[in-house]
Image 1 (cartoon, rainbow, N blue to C red):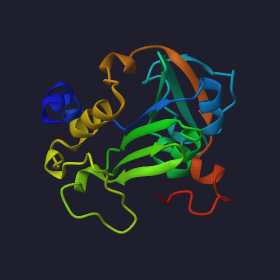
Image 2 (image 1 turned 90 degrees about the vertical axis):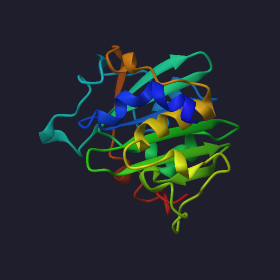
Image 3 (image 1 turned 180 degrees about the horizontal axis):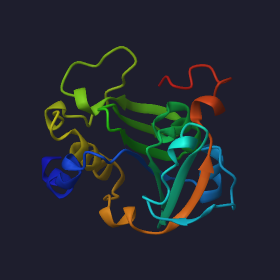
Image 4 (image 1 turned 180 degrees about the vertical axis):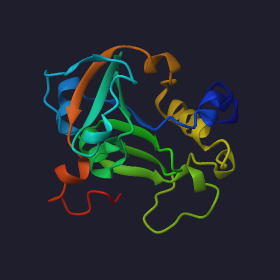
Length: 200
């Protein structure tokens, strides 16, 4: 995976970038938006990543989801949101034979990789610490090589893992594209009555 990491080196020094990006196969845009809690067919507009940022006074009341279609895949990008890092979202988005792979990090060093196949979580880990033994609740997949992840390169390693597992390379230009953007709820509020929604 080291050979893929070099193209993503820029992200390791993008210290203000907080996002979740997910690659989904086997779903329509409407189905995916519904899984995230949005209103299918009712985007709030065509927005860039920067434009999709939730105003500080509204943060936590709602979030935004930008969706890009690429062949049989969907790419879902959240600006400072984390719905795509929630295992229950991954399970729902990958049901009926689908596939889901997400990468999340924030400006405080919290990070997650989530992978689901056919409604089952097959990877759930914190890439910043992926070079250690798995902790309680983490699921380490066979493809994981912990020495690829270190405190200085865990972001580029995460995007490299996403490309390795999905065949979709993250394009930095996607951040500037104006994409259909949907308002979505706080995932913890939406899933408050779902037992173990945050567990793999």
